[in-house]
Image 1 (tube, rainbow, N blue to C red):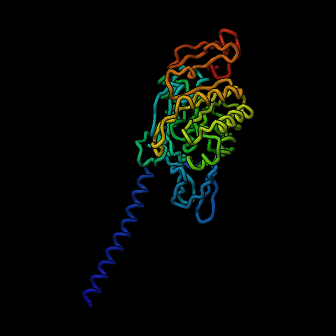
Image 2: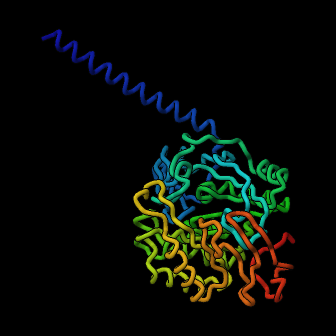
Image 3: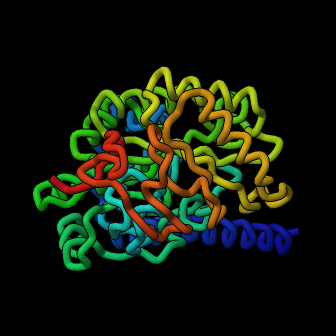
Length: 375
């Protein structure tokens, strides 16, 4: 009996020892990991009781207990303060044509210095950059690239702009803001490609340094946003209106997904909303869906669906409507809304000809909305 009691005691002793030492090891590894990054205190949050915080950056307003992260996986409550853990540590650094953003009415044919950090505040089941947007910085290769070095690299590579893109730039807001400020001082444009899921106050602040942006309007149904993106539609619409108010040049991308957001009535409603709230000059890109991430069961968007959406937008009164992810399609080109001639001919991301002179159609002198030169 005594022998059995002693064995049971040993079992419990070793279980307790391994559990306790495992927690210490995990804590040590976590602290070591955070030491690899430049923690920067977040700009928009509120302290709560028991060292919890409420993040005020995006509409989720995450309540984050001490030691935990928010929905985006890159904002950490450490000691009752909220920090971003990816400041100056992008996981993607590339030089792209501005057409890839896509921004068709901004400095055509120019090079853009593109950066992104891990994380996102949406969970889109169709995300094409899910390997970096739907993970944490522990699992990405990260560069040491402070804001000033981003600007220096952009100028060295003769890029006219810096783009905050690939993942959601709201998740690396402080890094984007400081880089944008430095870029503005050096005469480098700031562009972003965003899901538009951000609160008004931080949006208005970053807008002071943004020249242009493309916002994904992923659908025109609250139900679609909830089921496919774990988000809401209304904050995105508010973002678009604020960007317009703040004088940021905006273009919109709508990824048309078969059976989910391709209903013709909703597309028409979306186009009318854009016309009435943002104006007929705002370019709209209908982008072809390709199976990816958690939506590999759906087929690519039929071309006739995209062409129907294109006609719907034109009939609604939008002047500049494009079809994306279909290289060689005539709807890649920009046409003069007055004389109908080709202004910018494109194939994929390549500009074949540009007939815009001093912001106008060179054939009939119709003014064409956009940013056509660096003043």
